[in-house]
Length: 340
Image 1: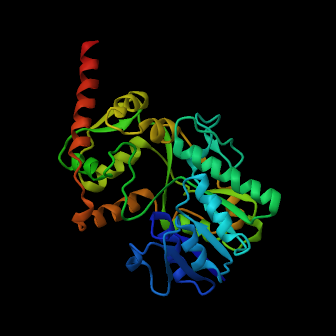
Image 2: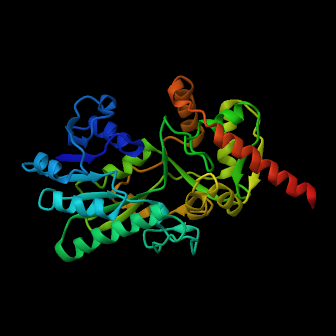
Image 3: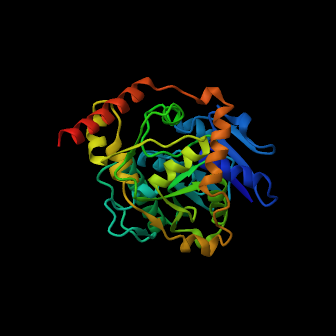
């Protein structure tokens, strides 16, 4: 069988491609601008193009046909509309990577199924994912366009340390604060529940959907089984670093308001996502991917990520503006406590 990955070198897609490269059942192609193709496993075929240039992509794809097309960089409705035009009649399955942040916020219940209402008034990113899903499902209902929707939650790999609050330059500054003994911000009281999924575990669930006709016209979320509080997540990171956690809890609403002045969208990423307790029911995807399970729990995965980070100085991106912002927020919270 023949699969095409649009993008293909991100956290989620790379985990899937690495597993597929070891399987005889799939011939894997990747279409992207060629920036990170050196990281792809041996045996992966590449097509170099900017898919946003539709005419150029159409010419490249004119004689192609795929069993599965997997879209990892479709963030706006117009991008999936373009894909519909490019791949109509050229694939037996189009898998769209949406987001579990599309589920209703605030959630009516903490156990999330694929039937949970889609709505997120706090995050434009999620609303665009919902609009993209709606377009694709309409094309499935009206024309039989072979859509499968996948909603990941917080998936990570060796290049990522999962955090609730960080700046635009990534997670390193928070890790640096921990290592330096400085206080770090945890949103809320740190007791909300969260799923973290290592990318190779996600890949197991995803591959079970590829080429599976029972997945056509359906939506699935894929997460690991492990559920942690944010306090447990930060403590596990501190344990892996061998440092004492110095946590300061700050309400998500306060962070959203304070972050606007710096251009941080904590209303979206926190109130619209991470501040809400979620427990994902994976029974639907397990019917098609029975091998889905947590093989890499967080206390192992975060050590893999930190080990990688410490030997890759190019990933240790300093963010002095975010660091100073954390200091100001923490000082404001401490003063408020002392003034009562």
